[in-house]
Every structure is written in C-alpha cells, then in structure tokens.
Length: 82
Image (cartoon, rainbow, N blue to C red; front, side):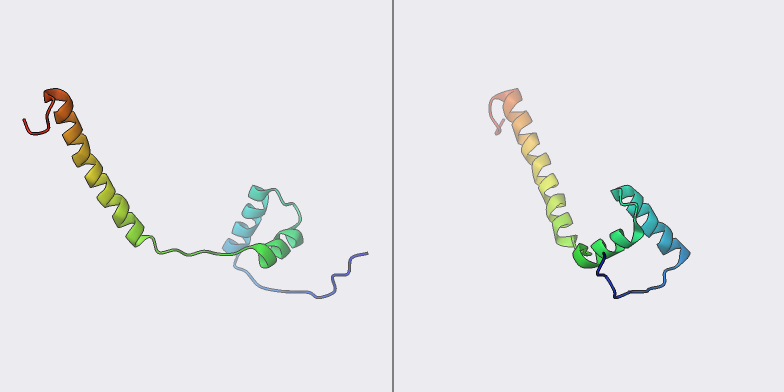
C-alpha cells in the first residue's frame, strides 16, 4: 500500500496546464502525479546570463575570419607578407 498521505495543491492557468501536460507527454510520463512529484523533488530551473559568452563567440568568429584570410593568402602566394 502507498504511504503517501500528504497532499499538495496548486493552481495553474489553462496555458500553464497545457504546458505541463505537453511536457508529460514529451517525456513519456502518463501519470500526472508522478510527473509533478518527480519535477518537485528532482527538477530544477536554470536561468543563465549568456551575454559574455555570446560576445566571446562573436569575437572568436571575427578572429577566425581574420585567420582564414591569412591562411588563404599564405596558400596562394606561399607567404603572408606578399
């Protein structure tokens, strides 16, 4: 017999309820209680600020383009100085 005797209750908007049910289906969990219990215990939300990473990727792309220009010139002429 199940020893779960404490009940949790919360309200959701129709849109939130649809998102919850869509996630259940996506993951393959058919029992709403199992999904909600698993997410409440093990689930987590990570919100990351990737602004610095995006800037680093942008700068890396610029550097990469410059290196490709040097490589192309070296391959064409045998020297990067010509």
